[in-house]
Amino acid sequence: MYKMIVCDLDETLMNDDGSLSAGNAAAIQAAAAKGVYFVPNSGRSYTSFQNDLEQMGLKDQPHQYSISYNGGLVLENKDNRPLIVNAMPYAIAEKVFKAGIANKNAATHVYTQDTLYIYNPIAEDAAYLRNRGVSFELVNDADFSRFKDLNIMKIIMALPTMPERRQMRADVEANVDPAALAVTYSSDRYVEFNPAGVNKGTASVQLGKLLNIQASEIIAAGDNNNDLPMLEAVGLPVSVANGIETVKTAAKYVTTADNNHDALAEVINKFIL
Image 1 (spheres, rainbow, N blue to C red):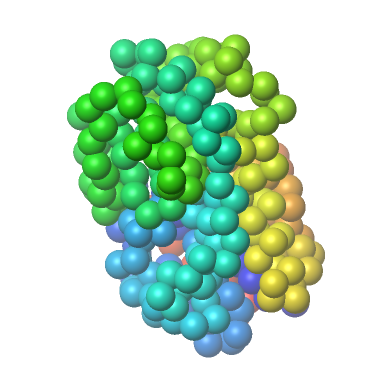
Image 2: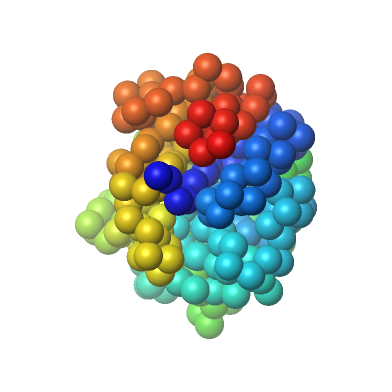
């Protein structure tokens, strides 16, 4: 019996326009009524999906949970209470940031525990974020010391092509020991840097241990590269129909529906209800 579902948001649970379908919301509520935890597991900040949690009936609820920043932060939804904080060491974050801002084509995002800051915002990226309810503050200079006393969860760069994202990874790893980083790609636009050992999979297992849930009792659903550690860590890895090929290969079940046609409701109906 599966006791927990951890689920990516963008391009997995959410429609392409950033909305949560009524069908997915109803299925999540039905799973919760059976005592199964539904845990959003997103690269985004928890602040950006509070309205979606409300649709699911999970907003500000005790004994319900969310994972943000690719595993950087695990919260109880009641009062958004932090349970696990996997922050990036300041010295490493500073080097990643400097590599990002050296590329004039990149929008460099710094996610602190509660706020997203962006250096050199790109119009298409800003529109993508706003469409998903993601607010951010602009950074207009290269002074990284403003983050000295904050928990830095991850740093990512938006770049238009995969070769550019791979080059950004190489630029970062020329200045930071690759062994200190967990690097993923997401949403066909981002290269993402977390501390080594921090990913959606490790956070899922950490939360499972807190709830006395074995990895074999967890379903994980995703679509992209940054979801792979989550799929590899659980008992039932699921790819939505629009997932990239490596995610489909890692999955034990691939949905018939894509993210725009209630793929998660399909999963819940098949394995939970």
